[in-house]
Image (cartoon, rainbow, N blue to C red; front, side):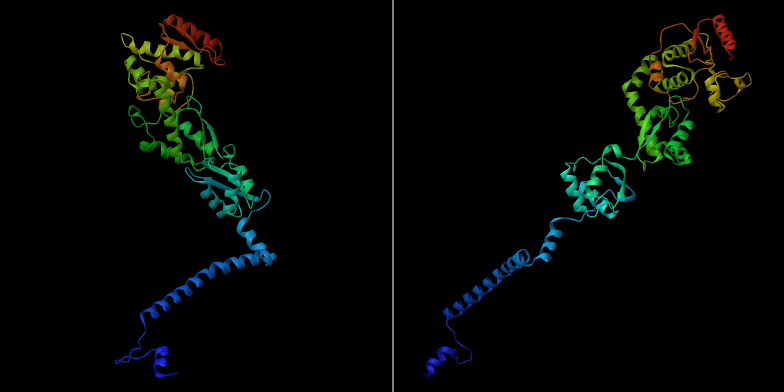
Length: 383
């Protein structure tokens, strides 16, 4: 091989000592390098496929375990043990609930729960509330317990005609929360959405009904629910419009309703009792209401007949002492009493007497002589 041939193969140097190559040679080398890189990029997924094939085909038992863990999530069996209270919050998704259940040790994995609830077609049917579950229970078992019928609720029935103080005591007893928390909430009326005519007083506006409260419901939230129930009733019976038609404010109607509720022994007598109140208010010359129920409220006592001494109280709720309506409601009236106050029965009655202490029936009179006759009957019956 001559010098020219050797220079051609090894690359001749120019005058500056740099190796000369043809442009074509450089391009061919570049293409060869690119082709080698491309072949390397194909090898990685090919190796992954070969490895997976080896696990499935020749990897045997260990390959099977690895795939099982990837496709079948951990899950407990049976109904579990112990007790856990889980709260589903408003707006939570099934996936969020699943994570909480896993965190509290109810289910073995969130994935097992989401699979189970999807299989039960309940992913979008979870209801907010508190539920009593167990630890280490199957995901399917947990799903079966998260239905509305299993929510932990305190059912509280607040009777019609209770004073606010008695209403708060009832709520505390039935929910297990301290009465002082209800008392504080009743005074802080800013969050209760009371109507403006209530004059920032809850008495008369904590509507009597049966309520269901979740364990974490606060006393303030409970009272707000009762005011909301009142507002619904006020809208239904058109309290504002009805009061205006009678020449009274909505607050005055509620005061009348509260007296009707306190004085009546049965619902059918309420419209007549309401009429007696209106007749006395409208009588010329003016006539005092003289309702024993208002004196009992003023003195924080209970009973159906005030004594002579009690009628001398200077309390503004004493309708034996002062003309007109008392300053506010004396009870929390229900639907019937409110409706009676808005729609009193027509009549000239000025008096009513519960003539038999053992009976809820009330009798009515127009004259003083008729009233005295009813009082005599009351005394004969042991009153």
